[in-house]
Image (cartoon, rainbow, N blue to C red; front, side, top):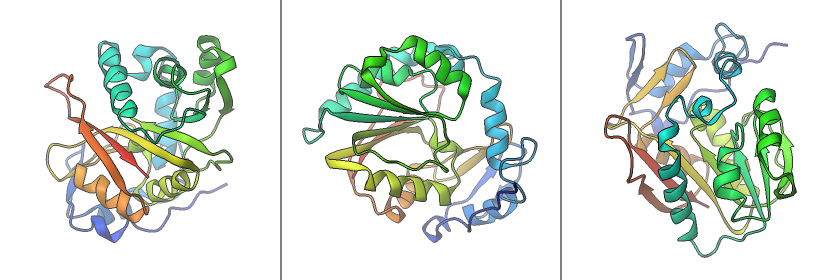
Length: 252
């Protein structure tokens, strides 16, 4: 079945320029999406989502595999995420959702120690197989084998973690998914969003895996369009200087 492209990106990103890894330049995100979102979005050769799914099918279900060979950043990543989350007193401790969960790295090391149950949302079957082997399944709720742009959320969550995965969403689907997440929050709950951000107010499309690096301004425009309120933000402090900055956001 063909999966047609969604409407153009939100107008609030219309002034943000960018480019792609093949050297093409764009005056704004809408212009880029008009080029990228043609035909079947799930075609493995040319589709925006098809290319990223094909990329992840080839990745090893290990910590190194899900972190692109950078397993050395795992400890600092988890430690600073934990400190950030624990600084927000309104968050309950009943249920969490780990989006783009992979093998359960974040569930195992961050969420399971803090929350009674964690649901895993992950489109790659081979990743979820390993997650079931690695995790204490008494602390796991649902294993949801689906993509963010297609899933229906049926539970209420004290925290929804979206880390290093929203780069694969179009701007339109980003807004749709984050709006769904807002509706799925329990009272006092948050969306914990953690992602690389470009150093300047420009976007960059990686043509190999159909991912999009956005700027802080780009993300904040999408948050606003999603109807979300930013209640806290901070940088990942311990981080290799040769990599793009990583920011953490708490949203309600």
